Image (cartoon, rainbow, N blue to C red; front, side):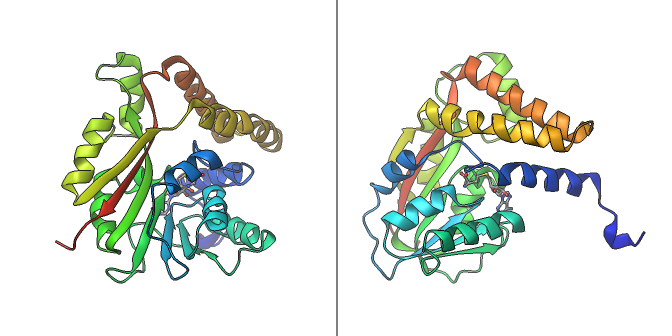
Length: 261
Ligand code: SAH
């Protein structure tokens, strides 16, 4: 066997995860109503606008944006199969002249300073870190440009310890909405709007469509421990959400870059 064909467990896991999520419309909690609600706070877009959709997945939110905004959207994800699917979907919807998916990491974006009118990032900024993403991406925005991100947040000041212990290893920057807004302000933006994603974004648009994918997946990978553990973890995730949804959720944060300091 050549070295090239040997996969590490880590790579194997990522490929499995990618294959699983290729069969779902969204790869994180969200839906088109919520994307449009966030978009309603953004008032600077024209046909010449440049938009980046970061951690785009297969582009569930990208297609909604493309159908409702002027401008050109460049999308980034590290999984080539997600980007291929996004580009295929764009072509199917006749959006190929407005949307382009590129395989690239969010910590190495190919923009000049002051290039973008809007940065969009649903369910993905935690991969670089909330503060780091806000800070590093800011230079790519024009003055007056917007950033719109969703991020896991605490909805209450105090939480049961079971849910804190479950969330914090996954999301070490998890904070209250007020705490997140303070980070946005400190990173040099004007906080413009904030709203909690309704629970249907998790149930009807995330966990429920997964059930079908899980069935297909477990049939294909019957007896595969990694696949079984992955599905068990998702089920636990759904259980935790159902039990503790009053204490945490995804929150949309929309903010504006006011100056170039
Ligand atoms: N925005 C999509 C996907 C969210 S899931 C939706 O809401 O449906 C998070 C996405 O971030 C995944 O597609 C994952 O592949 C991507 N991702 C993870 N690390 C990344 C990185 N370093 N750079 C770019 N994308 C990344």
